Image 1 (tube, each protein chain N blue to C red):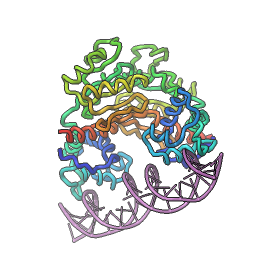
Image 2 (cartoon, each protein chain N blue to C red; image 1 turned 60 degrees about the horizontal axis):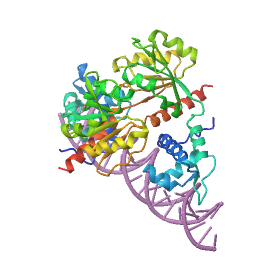
Image 3 (cartoon, each protein chain N blue to C red; image 1 turned 45 degrees about the vertical axis):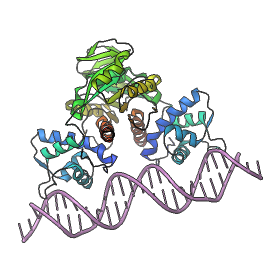
Image 4 (cartoon, helix red, strand yellow; image 1 turned 180 degrees about the vertical axis):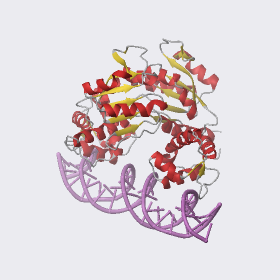
Length: 213
Length: 213
DNA sequence: TAGATTGTTAATCGATTAACAATC
DNA sequence: TAGATTGTTAATCGATTAACAATC
């Protein structure tokens, strides 16, 4: 894999945004786009766009034209590893877990959730995808060689689930339970902290409502 | 409101994390905590903890003791505005929308989702909370004086829903549709970009799996 | 050619960390 | 008192932006 190791997290985080934008642009027939056009539409700076794209693009942008949309899409997909979908399981078939299991959109972002697990199986399938009891978790992960687990169980159960996933062979964990997980250093965890996002929103909203009084 | 305007987004984003940690600590009977203990448990630096807490705490930490847990909890709750819950509506009663409507956990983070709206009402209520048809959106928002809207509709419908929310009086939008919304400058939008989080996770995971080969 | 646009080097900005004096 | 811990000032680090030469 020729993914350069020196690409910043900030840049990586923006990549799915570029991809989404470029896919939309391609759909309406755009073939070339300048960094300034992309920047304006995405509300970021043009220099940043050029720097980001230079890091992942296999062909440089052309002066006078800009970047070739199709090529860029392929390069970003490759960079993000979307050319081969990661199979994943979700543990916790509550509201969020079921929403994830039923959401096809993840396929556009390189993720293929193939099953859910829960202590109590209330529905055998969600939109055609199976929900299994926890007892089957380990063997399923081993058989299917799953490397990515998504945790959507309540906080109190999260650490235990996390340990089980790792024990069974999962190496990356996407954690939606609102708690700090402790894992060996060889495991990657990414916490999704909706509360942090909400805090920023509420804060700005409070300032705004304050002003308008 | 005496919220200091000069607190960075980075600090604000960490506040819900501190709050969660401190609430847990209080539950197990901790009365004082040093910045180094908090830092170790939360996997951030102790100086950062002291700086962050100094910005929101009404009483300074005590040398030799640390910070008083109960007081800190109250200060952060106040800072984040959790002392008065924001009423919100969610538009889009698909998987994610229903998950949000049914999730009581938001109450712990200052948010009270009181109703959902959708074009097609398949269930009249979710965990006791009402789902209404889109036709009722405007009047409901006006009557209940709702200032915060959550968008969980598909991408294609997001901008229209956004416009309707703003038209009816919403001032802050939490957007889960994965598209860039265009809004007047007087409106606050916070996009939740799961794809960005996933990109970081997959990237690190790929590096990891690569190494272990 | 002229002009739009890229890619790169240097400057700026913001956030985190290091060092250390102040305090209970 | 001695020592742990805070709060603050200065240094570092990383990311973004500004400036501008290179290019088609």
